[in-house]
Length: 299
Image (cartoon, rainbow, N blue to C red):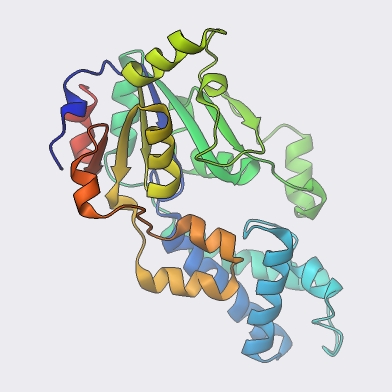
């Protein structure tokens, strides 16, 4: 952990948490899950790998996100399966979902000590607020799967997309209220670092007072320098750069095979400044392990 005067003068009352690669290792699981879906489609259809991979990237690029549940329907619309004999959409969807789910269950893991930090913060009256560029439905399911949903005050996420793309059993669970959570979920259209923290924190209509509150009482924790830390720079609040969440280059390369460029960049380990500039930033702290957060946040 780098030393910084940022730990001395701030009384944190709200923590803005990024989610993917900050609370859990999204890139690690996603690289394996999307590769598993590709392998499943190839095995079930006999189509060449390069054709399947190219068509998957085309679909996700058109969707603008990797987290679109209508993959098989989309590939079908693109004509990928027109030469496949005895093509069965529902059977292929079921097998691809199983391949994806196995990789998710095996590799989507919450980082050690993150839950303890959120629990300590909540017990001290500090609000844990999620601000993620992931679609709301998927982000919420990962919060629940990670067993931290009871520690979240509110969650802000990108629009979830057309629910009609979700599998029928998932749509039925949504209608039955089985995916309901205790915290409020707000879908917004603005990605970080352009997030309006005054709205996220629900502050009064007093710009000067709000700016002072954010500088003195808000911490942003995230893995992405050009999104999470840029947001902290913009508002002058404490920024905790989660170096523990920087993904492996091999996993990034795997994701790039399937991902639109914008989504790949969102999860790539990026730094916008050199180390000389870093040394002059008094509100940004770079932290290698979540265990150091207790001292920084005075928990």
